[in-house]
Image (cartoon, rainbow, N blue to C red; front, top):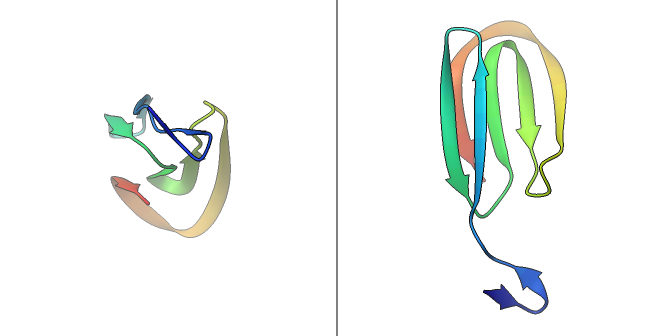
Length: 63
């Protein structure tokens, strides 16, 4: 399915690390916090990680 040329097919993103793992089926970027890192998983399968100054427990939030 697409809208204005953008593929809206849900993408499954699997993440494993730290204290646990998450699997997210999302139509948007997903941010996963683990320890002092936040990883942004993009729909094309790539990701980027930033370091934070404090400890964050595992959480997955689609935006």
